[in-house]
Image 1 (cartoon, rainbow, N blue to C red):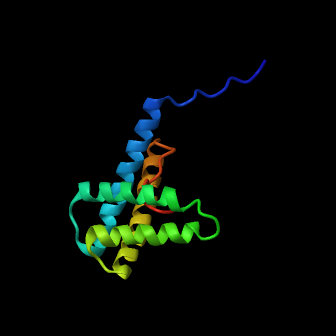
Image 2 (spheres, rainbow, N blue to C red):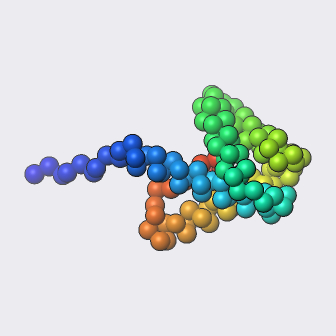
Image 3 (cartoon, helix red, strand yellow):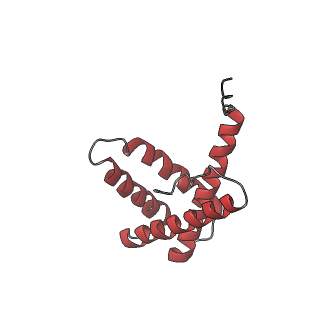
Length: 123
């Protein structure tokens, strides 16, 4: 008897996963900017995460230098959106990545798996 195939995700499930991942990325970026730059606008962080995710998706596949180009572009977006210097923008990235890992781990503890942090590199 063949093993039944797992149910495929419908468009609603994919949109929900996208929205949750974007909100998690926004939370992580908001935490990063709050710690490094004392920024307080969550909606600004979600839009920045979306822009960062788009740029990452475009540049990361570039052969050889894609990861480095994508990371530099992501930091440049944070720098532009929050009017920070390069080092503070990179600091936002480190704090945002850490926050994303913590949020994703907490969600998995309560049974919500397969979530990423859209707009936060490496999370």
